[in-house]
Image (cartoon, rainbow, N blue to C red):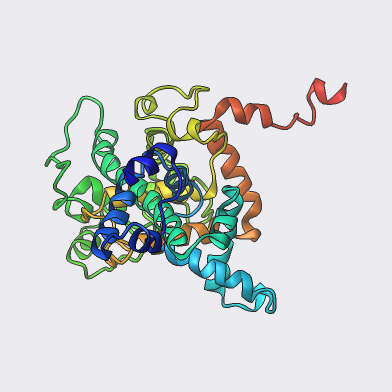
Length: 350
């Protein structure tokens, strides 16, 4: 009965104290009840839905229960100590915390005024949303990406399996080429063997060639084609996640479905670009389970390295141009409405 009331009205579950003291329920039953509530509330609870979207578009790789706990404590600390005096890592974490509060009205009140059990429940729901969507996207992209990298009318030889990734990464010519770090030549046999054997160790901040348009890297112009590759945009991993899988191989349309429509999304975000690039890189890798602590795939370092660039104020001109370009590919109607009037156009002279 308690479960039905919670699910129907989408309210907070009774506190553990009330369940144990007032309803005379055993601690073991209460613990199992809370786990059941968490596992069954993902469909209806708006916090889970918001966590899913926030992870995809703003920040994906962190421990959200810890982030919320630390954020509340830090709000009290910065009343006496300026945020600028905190270590860089804590400042970055607090920036994500503030973005989360801003994106979900009323969340701060829930965290400040709720009981210990209620706060724990909020933290777990948001974290569940972030982790859940990352797992869902990982699963679907790992399969879909094989279709996108297969030339029309041809088959991948030797074949790449959808459920077993033992021959991915540098073990296969196609995935090896796409993951080969820029500045290295995949066609060089010595380089290829060193990558396969692990003698050449690839860290997350060594970006693969697939992030560049036409898979071409210009050492004289590092921004040329960066994060504009066919695999990210045209084929397209971004559309697969944010609009709909069925729109991937069609011309850009004005419709906004799936995640984009659900959250009234009319523009790409820096976080969403980094997220998609990280998911594509993982799909081409050997690993079958996405883990922040996987040092071989090193997804977290890769993700943060992209964010570091895309949040760098010194690169604002290139970043603005990149966002505008992405919006024209993904949200053409919305971006056209925001496009500035050309300086020499007739309209500008009227």
